Structure formats: structure tokens, C-alpha cells
Image (cartoon, rainbow, N blue to C red):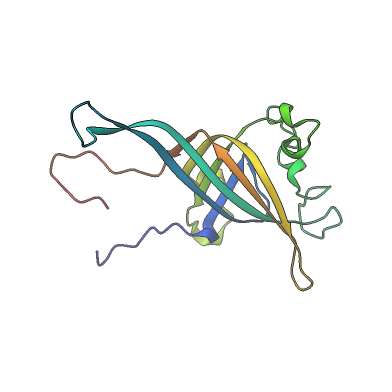
Length: 184
């Protein structure tokens, strides 16, 4: 491995999109994929013959640093970056704040979450859409929990929990070869 540069995935180079909109000041994202299985048993045998998959569920959470509508943040949204602004300007996403409004919860919609990795850009130029690699897509996510935290010496953060229906790892690029080479 000497002489090779590692292509590590780091948080400082990550971009998180919710329904096609980049999350402003996202601090982290976590997800897990669970495969539910049932044992297949046969009469007259004590051991399980096989475990067959019956469902895939995706669970996760992400956090953002909140800013207000009076924020001096350059290019900040006019009215902050709360949950109601996740889908602002996108008629296909609906208002994500409906996920937490008892009167409108049935009209809330699902969104896709995508995680990108920025590529190194020559000369320190700002990266464009062509300068990112799609790593993960989590489909049909529904926001299920919102929690906020604020302390005297800190900044306000909001954490969101979601469930999704499908996980796709978009970054696996190992080539199928017949020579038996190692994956790099």
C-alpha cells in the first residue's frame, strides 16, 4: 500500500442533501440498515435449516446547527434553516414541518437523503456539483423525531431521526475481474 494515497471519507468533505436540498450547517449523520430474518424449520429436525430475509429497514439521524432569520451568515435563508425550510422552493417535497404538526401529519411526505463526498479541487477553487461523488442514497425517508438543544455557552442544535425504505451504497466501485486481485 505504500505509494498509494488513501481516499478516506471524512465529515469535513461531506455534503448531505435532503430531498435534493443541501442541509445548511449539518454537523453529522448516522444510519443503520437492518435485515429482518425468519428461521425456516422442518418437522423432525432440531436445527434451523436456513434464515430467510423478510424485510429491510433503514434508521438514522442527523443534526444541524440552527441559525435565525436575522443571522449574519452569508447566503442564509431569509427565515432561518428550520425543518419547515428543508423543502422550501420545492413543490415535490412538501413542507417537512408537517411531520411534526398533529393536524397535518397525514399529509407529510417522504424524501430521499443523499450523502456526497467532495473531491479535492485543484488550486483551492470552490467545488461544483461535478466535484462531488455520491456515496449513499437512503430512499423514502420520513422524519420521526425532532429534538433541540441549547445551553448558556453553546449554539442551538437540532437533531432529527428518520426511517427509510431502501439503502444504496453508491460508492462501491470494485471491478469484477478474473485475475483474483484484491479490492483497493
